[in-house]
Amino acid sequence: MKPWLCLLGIVLLSACGSARTAPETITNPPEPLLSGSEFLTAETRTLQADDFANPGYLWVDQGQALFEAVVGNSLSCAACHTDESGSLEGAAAKYPRWNSEDRRIMNLEGQINACRSSQQQLSPLEYESNELLSLTAYVANLSKAHPITVERDPGAEYAFDQGFEYFTTRRGQFNLSCANCHQDNWGQSLRGDTISQGHGNGFPAYRLEWQTLGSLHRRFKDCDTGVRAVPKELGSDTYLALEYYLAVRAEGLEIEAPGVRR
Amino acid sequence: MAAIRLSVPDTATAGEVIEIKALIQHPMESGFRRDSRGEAVARDIITRFECLYAGETVFAGDFFPAVSANPFLTFHTRATETGTLVFRWTDQDGQSWEDAAEILVE
Image (cartoon, rainbow over all chains, first blue to last red; front, side):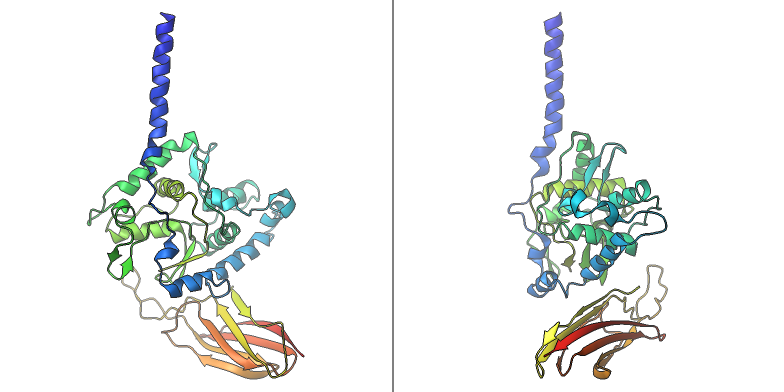
């Protein structure tokens, strides 16, 4: 009886194992992996590469000031994140990550707000507020040129699947999924534009269309609105899952924040 | 708080033509747009930019609604003396933002 039970256990375990590894086979990153900046005009690429003229640096500057600022009785971000105790250089390339305490995906914005409430006793910043965008831009910029290396946590497989599903599910009046454009037809023309592969490595990015800096989730909302679907909330679990899936898909691409996009 | 970025060479030789860059964070809302509810978005623009070198205006410009958000200016001037360059942007309501840079002329 016992060997039989043992065998059943092995069969069950291996079944679980294969369910876990399944997403790996469907990640299917585009080949070759190309950053969104590869699809820009030469002028826009030049603007992004110019550390002075890139308007995203207005937010990076502000973010640095906020990072070093002391608010009330709380410590500044810079008081803990010193060069000795561990600078944040390269840290943003590991985001979003699985937060096992909250059992939620945590992106850079979420991490900054978590730090504010747990370490600084400050209220969280509103998503897409100028302060949160600036801090995110500053921290992301510290990882510029670092390749995205997101850890695949076993606890996050559900979120990964959810993100993959959102990416590949048709929606909206146009009945298009993200993958219809950014996986199957990247490099093709869509009106006056060339379709990119849909990576988030330039975000938060200065979009010429917005005339301002915006988060990746704001970009998601634009894409959902573009196919005439009802967009999700900024910072929602669905968008966090999508951000996580996209980061895994874009593994190895270098962080460009603050990018300049159309 | 409007973020400002300036690029002025630290040193120059007398008579040298120097390149100056100035970038300010501002929405430059044209007044022609409508929001998602169809309401007109009020105009909010910078109308004047001035650059003073040792107290003298070396470059100035009037801005209009067609100027993009976060206007970026590049211009040239001749390095004449060691001194301060003052950059001032003034909006339609008279509010202004100022920043300065020092230059050493040898």
